[in-house]
Length: 216
Image 1 (cartoon, rainbow, N blue to C red):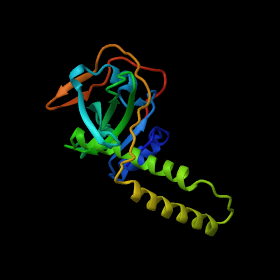
Image 2 (cartoon, rainbow, N blue to C red):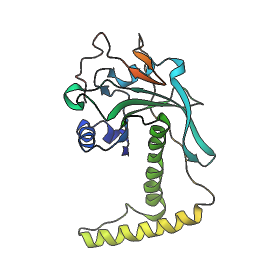
Image 3 (cartoon, one colour):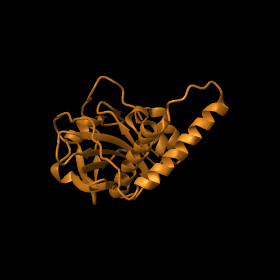
């Protein structure tokens, strides 16, 4: 599952997916508080230089959409994960190559052993979905209906979707995908990032990082 920050910041959604065993890569705002580590932008700001890896998150109109990515596993939640957890939680950040001050933040939940490249791929799929909806609104009037009953709404949406499918098929050869970037980083102090094998892990900080309780 992947969504934008409006939904990703909702801890009930994350918990529901985890209880169902469904993996996710959810965008969150830079002010997002994370269990055991505090604000996500503070945690990412402390990432060492070698924690950033260059990955493509999908094809764009001008080729692969390449960014620098940093990812670190989060400490397990003892009262939820049990003694032998089958999934890991991650914090993930995407940094623009041309504008390094533009950073997007994510929370992820994936089976143990999932490579960072797979988390990046899932994060990148959201733009194709958003572009599809926006194009259908702009080109086919997907959101321009004035109906009060379901049959009328259904007919309008179905016609708009069929029209968009036709236009998308005609435009596929030219390629119409676009990239996006969001949010900015915030500086912090001592880094809690620790190298564990071939991946990074965030350690629990020694002191409290904010006045708002962390969410799971």
